[in-house]
Image (cartoon, rainbow, N blue to C red; front, side, top):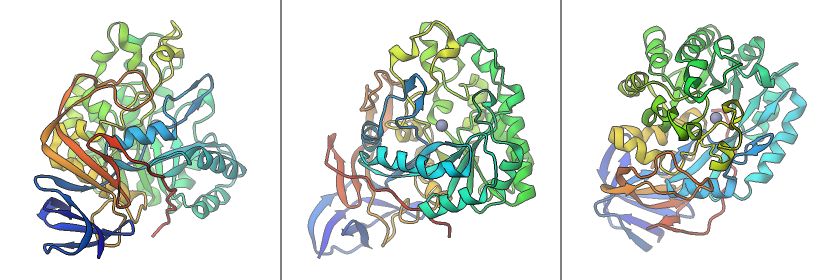
Amino acid sequence: MFDRGFIGGDLYLEGAFKAMNLYTEEGKIAAISRDLLPCRETVDCQGLKVLPGFIDPHVHFALSLGEFTSADDFESGSIAGAYGGVTTFIDFLDPAMRAGDFKDHFARRRAQALKSRVDYSFHTTLGHYEGDLSPLIEDSLEAGLTSIKIFTTYSDSGRDCPPPVIEACLRSPLTILSHTEKDALVDPHWQEVASYEASRPARSETEEALHLADLVRATGGTLYMVHTSAGSTVAALAENHTDLLGKHLFLETCPQYLHLDTDAFKGESGRLFLLAPPLRSPGEQALLRSLFRHIATIGTDHCPFMKAEKLRYPEASRVPKGIGGIEYAFLLLYDLFGDEVIPRFTANPAAIFHLENKGTLETGKDADLNLFDPSGTTLVEGGHSRSDYSPYQGRTLKGSLRATYLRGEPLVKEGILYPSQGRFIRRRLK
Ligand SMILES: [Zn+2]
């Protein structure tokens, strides 16, 4: 006798839809069958697509930037995610400057994340790291973190990773995430919202991306470029390194680079849209959309602030950078690309980040499920983030999420949030 049967839906299996029933037991997918099998409760999935729970590999909950802290903590951020079908997210540890930093940084984030309603992991993060990398890698793997983020810029705040350390990272078996901007092409004296894009131009991303791709080739490492913002970066990588893409080099982009452009910087509300890297020109955005096939995953870089915080200082350079996005990410992408986006929210991030029990509908995996109605529509409203504005407010998007299940239990059903406790997912290299 199974716990629950999801009956009559179209299951997303190995990249295609099949009319099958899915049965769960003790939080796992226990059977996938055309037959009607005995179960304690049935969920009618007629007319619905049954998708794996979504994975957001890039969020910043309770991120402290000195005077400002991002508006969502692990509770509100994970709830906003739950309403968007996200059953797993990966946040970041604070930048480590030396190997000894790891244990404190990890303990601090673990404690903060106890409030999460969905499952989670972390990326280890490096600042201007000094010393031998191997003890940090050992600690990281022992803690269950198989990925490390580095910055190629932010020399002004001591977060730029020294080139020999980047190379050492890429010689390790971990997945290396890069914030990809050429430091020398980022204008440290930038002042005005209107000139923000020009102060860290698409070229700074493209040149750094090509440089890092060369390093990947030299080292045999695995690199994941976060928040790829410019179509011309994707075009340059596809032209010069097509053999690496999807194997050693993975590109993430975010809903904001596909839906918002430099027009958002115009006028009074421009500073509400400041984030790094900047929104790009409409032309760059069109190119990014046209090269979507090269994008491996969607991360949201969810890092909203309150309106009053964005508007606190007249100087644009003092505005905390970041916007929200976790709640509507899937629908924003589905609206543009349809079913093509599904693996970018599920199987791809699961494979790249070693989330072995997540991302696909297979027996033995966690029963994280989304019941999606492709014929519905969704109006973007304020949502469940604590931030008091959404960059996408007022848009009507194709499709609607009818219910989300976390490890076999309801998480959100017809707009109602159910009690749940997120778990830390210990990852390991294959
Ligand atoms: Zn980020």
